[in-house]
Amino acid sequence: DAGVIQSPRHEVTEMGQEVTLRCKPISGHDYLFWYRQTMMRGLELLIYFNNNVPIDDSGMPEDRFSAKMPNASFSTLKIQPSEPRDSAVYFCASSPRQGLNTEAFFGQGTRLTVV
Amino acid sequence: KQEVTQIPAALSVPEGENLVLNCSFTDSAIYNLQWFRQDPGKGLTSLLLIQSSQREQTSGRLNASLDKSSGRSTLYIAASQPGDSATYLCAVSLTYKLSFGAGTTVTVRA
Image 1 (cartoon, rainbow over the protein chains, first blue to last red):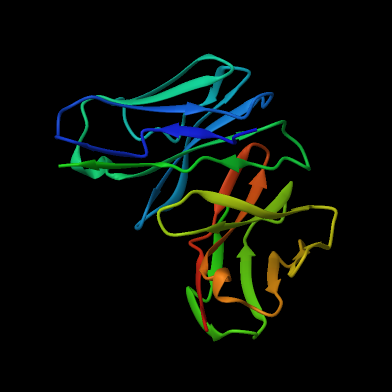
Image 2 (tube, each protein chain N blue to C red; image 1 turned 180 degrees about the horizontal axis):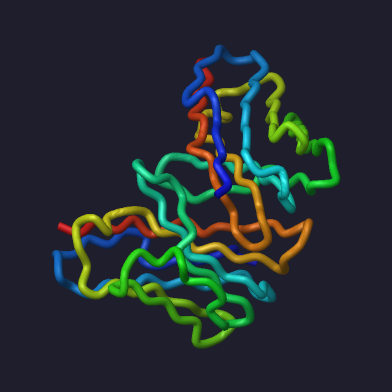
């Protein structure tokens, strides 16, 4: 398997523009997670899905952020409108199941810069 | 709220020396603990996962221990190499959610 695939790897956009980040999880994994990494706050969970259904979005910072998972092989994280403070690295991760032996596999991340 | 602390924040050692990285967490009711490696500009690579019922896990030169009652884990890397230079993150799992430490940045000098 190619692992978790994210696109784009880098995104530079102007404040106010819409940004869409994409993720393809590992085939057969039931759980998908979106994390954000910044120098100030480290890695934070934004939202996670189980079998394509959003389970917990309490980490989504504002209504400007939204995430969807239309099928088991694709998810998007959208920011509209974007702001400079959204600049960060956004990671997608997937996991086969919950429980004691749940290992999370991360993508390479999307580095977002909002100017 | 689960707090995860990693000390030291940075570490520089000569090649061949053993590395000892520490991780502590405040809530012992965890499912598992996972150690990751992150290279600059890259994603996270899973190194080891220790279930809450286990005391340690080993993979090659890596050994991780877990003392759940005291809220501590230690990652040992034997005979360090320049290729081990990276940031190492520990994360504890409480159901679905991973809580991460800030990481220890390791430099192995040739």
